[in-house]
Amino acid sequence: SWAVVACGGMSIGHKGMVMASKAMSMTMFDLFDDAKLVEEVKTEFKERKGDDVYKAMIPDGPPPIGN
Image (cartoon, rainbow, N blue to C red):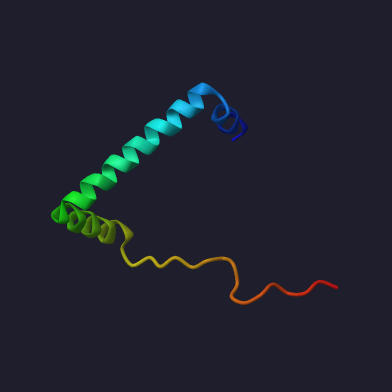
């Protein structure tokens, strides 16, 4: 939304982005450090995903040439 974009250029938006990046980086550190945790994450992902397969809405091949 425009409000989220507007906050991105302000100090509150910057603080939020920094906090989010710290949370993601510490999560990755935990995953790199613990192979058992990685297996648990993979198992949970497979359970939640089920048999759903993502199908991109973008067709294969180059776009058609316009007239």
